[in-house]
Length: 504
Image 1 (tube, rainbow, N blue to C red):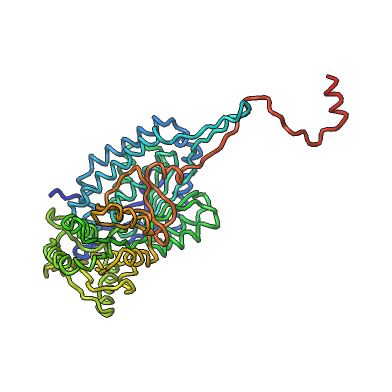
Image 2: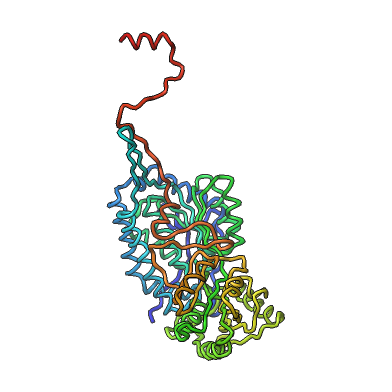
């Protein structure tokens, strides 16, 4: 495998890679061995202010938002092409930085390029307004206009793909961007800045400030010249962002946590269901917001299905994320590793049977959690209610359709849901009864960029994806044009003026 040199990561502000104003930096740690990979410039309010000012100047003075669509899309498509050209390096950096298996990060790079191509197409074909004729007097129509400076705050799980998922529609619709990537995964965000720099975007159109949520992130949210905040991450942080955005009346889009149910009935294609739920919770190291972290099994198949789950768990390949045969790598950071292990201890205290796969002794220096099943759970357990965000799945039996719907909804989250049954009437009936932003019937989590993504309850507010992104990244302006000689009330017109007007 080709390896790539990693140097110090700097901010990207106004078309230049720069140190922070305070001159501070922090260490970026390799989750595979907990050794330092590199240093990262640490941003604070002063750096955010410089980035926002650059973005605002670019929006106001540089013809980005008012540039012809064809001209702007040339830049967007150039970014997509450069992502594809650098796909191998992106996959390597992502695995090195996050611990995600390289066989999976390669797919994320290709998805990232598709994000830019998709929005280049969407802006030209779908960002269209409406027009209404009112008798012969008026034509009323709507147009979509870029809002201004977009603040984007992205997570550390699949960071490159999720960064491009926000950056692509924000830029394509004519906004300028300040991106604050997760501090635990800065490498591919920096690579995105290098790619955008090479694509030749005007100075200030795209900016990155690295740092921590409490300082850099909070400063971006509070800044009065930032018109919108798109955030993907943990629910508590999302709630805080909404509070802090209120003072400046920012638009916000929140894609937050999940505790998504997968429901398997006895009549389902059990082989495909097994493939789907194992992949759904153990791919991406279990660090997936839409993971089926609660598995509900119809009681008649519970024992046999659990035995097959155990066999799969024991056979999952745990190892070096840069090894193409690895299926499960280390968790992103020591702190997160400790949190996930703590939840497994809680499960034991709550009475769950814990069944885990194997982590080789040679991997003891990394943040490895074995693929884990929490068996004989009930839905009231803490481990069945709270997001663990690791390779851990709570398995719960059920007897009736009504019972499983109640349990599926008896949680504060509502991001995704999965139902497996060959009775399609029941499949439709159940997913429509589940409180979730998204649901799949007889399928794992597969995405279509044309449809919205988002959750309900504590899993978020708003939708992005497809033309739904236009609702967030643009402002709709309504324009009324008089085309006839319609009557206008004449308040305050004197009787004398009316007489003179009549004589004329």
